[in-house]
Length: 311
Ligand code: NAD
Image (cartoon, rainbow, N blue to C red):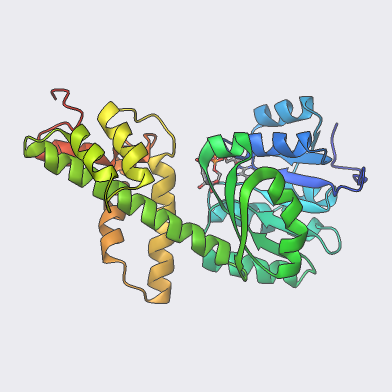
């Protein structure tokens, strides 16, 4: 059924939700909202995930604007900052069709400073934007165990909270608009830098003739231990580079981190080197590999392979 010409009626006291962006993350999140009983109106630029959600009980909206007209709360789960800007403010965008006192929850990972600009533009139209990027990957989206970092006014957070608690296990209100995106940027800075450090350590060990698997095991018990050494270190040893989290998306996050730091005048020399490594992989043929594949160029430069398999 199309929601383009009719208004959705809240059922069972639950707000009608609009969901825009039904990709790797958005599709299972939308299913979880349907299962929780929310009336759901969905939109994407490709038809296939829409058909799947409609078969599960959602209604289709033919544009972001139609989605906004039909919903009390609009959720976006889109790749990057320009995508969110286009969906909100572009032709047939959501912003000009939002209901009175509407809430927009942007769960994409985008630039924090643009988020603040979007929040101000929506506030001038009487709507509230909360930024609610997530960590936990596709598995967390499917299992509704995401960690969700929320920025925006407390009133918006309280309205968003029950919806977000349907999608994740940890929901933290970090601060005002953009604070969720800043938190996510910090998360991605630490994750990529740690993957790079683990990769460098395992390549160094291998080149020195020491078994990288044993090194990983020994390090896990000490101060260098981390979930990334555990999981991504094992991926490097096993050569399981299918994503996971794609280098292409981490490079997008790196651009957000570098541009935010630059606009704020904050030096991030360590991360800049990691960002260059992500860019070289993304510009080459590594963009679709898991981010643990950051080990590959280091191995090539050193002429070794950490899993012990001959090159
Ligand atoms: P994806 O590329 O799989 O999905 C994005 C969806 O948005 C696609 O279905 C696409 O068709 C749709 N879309 C893009 N532009 C559109 C437009 N203008 N109008 C309508 N639909 C549009 O991406 P994803 O992996 O689901 O990631 C979404 C966001 O979540 C990204 O910001 C990403 O960084 C973040 N994230 C991803 C993961 C992960 O593991 N994949 C984990 C945490 C956070």
